[in-house]
Amino acid sequence: MKTTLNIEGMTCNHCVEHLTQALKHVNSVTKVKVSLKEKTATVDHKENIALSTFKEVVAEAGYEVV
Image (tube, rainbow, N blue to C red; front, side, top):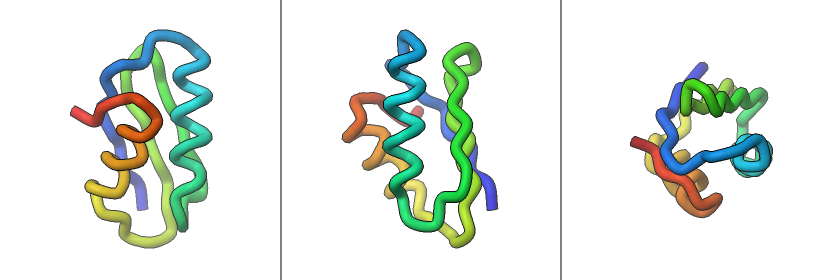
């Protein structure tokens, strides 16, 4: 399964790394690709994960899913 999130609030490569690490800690996530240029995070996962879970993790990292 793959989910692409539109992210607001990232300004630098540190933001990309911080968000990548936060999303990698979600259960069943296998791969994360965050793009500063496109303002997206693409997450591959084994099981269905609620959008609210991703929104919560992104918010805890200091960013916003839009």
